[in-house]
Length: 189
Length: 189
Image (cartoon, rainbow over all chains, first blue to last red; front, side):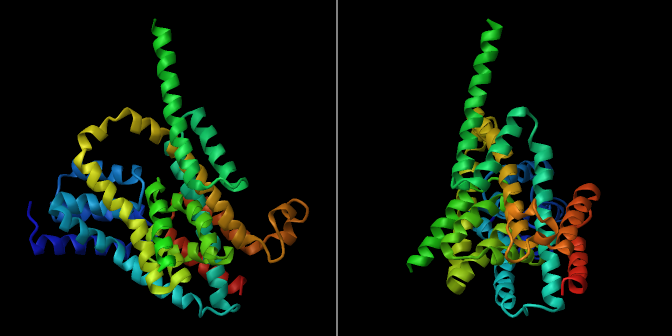
């Protein structure tokens, strides 16, 4: 495994660029990263990258950082992983601290406050459309619809916390699959 | 010191159970942020900053909540907390990838988690949107009695149009964010 400084710096640069010039989250970073890692630097074959990109979205955690860790570790071991991970997160961290400080100086009314209010309204709409897009690809059965509605209702109207809902849903998926397998076996016999 | 440790642990848990990336973590962050006395209004600002500040949304959110709760060090500990699960998980997955690829238990677990993640994202969208769109001194239940007196009309229009245009025509969110900001500067000032 080549863990020379040049490779590590290249890893840092690729992910720093992807993390600095893409907005709206880690999902939108993936195409930019693919272009650099696969086409420009030829660090790994496209097939491998796509498998890791898919895993980055299915595994829990920060999607952009998941992808950085996969590529970084594949290319440059644990050190490479740290360089890539730092690249993917450092601008989000620094710029967000600056933004949070500046936020306190936005006046209560006037055009800047108005603009910010407009952006807030649009941003919450993007979260809704993220739910729509994700749902279109991931909900393919009646069971899925029930789980989605149940998760929504539990989080909105009860005190049950989101992590419990996630774990419960995973458990329900497992039990559902066991029941379906048993039923299929019975039908065969 | 106790506060930093708490931020680290809480955001570690959010990262470890955040299936579906930053948007899916939103409901968990809303839940947990109450412990760090983040107001719903501050939360609405966070979603706006997520769109304006580049990088992974989970990193943006952890930095924001951490900074408000405990300044620079709070931001750092929250960000490390939300990042660690990604690093640990990817090391494990790459070691066992052959076994992970066709693991039936893991797949059935994910079949349950994915639809639930959609429900969580939708719940986050509704919670955040109601913080942005409801006029002061009103709540969701008065929406049915006196809709015009409850909801900010310009904000509501931006919300609906942004969601529709983003889903139907796949317009780049950055452009929509800019337009929403300009409209807000004129009509919401």
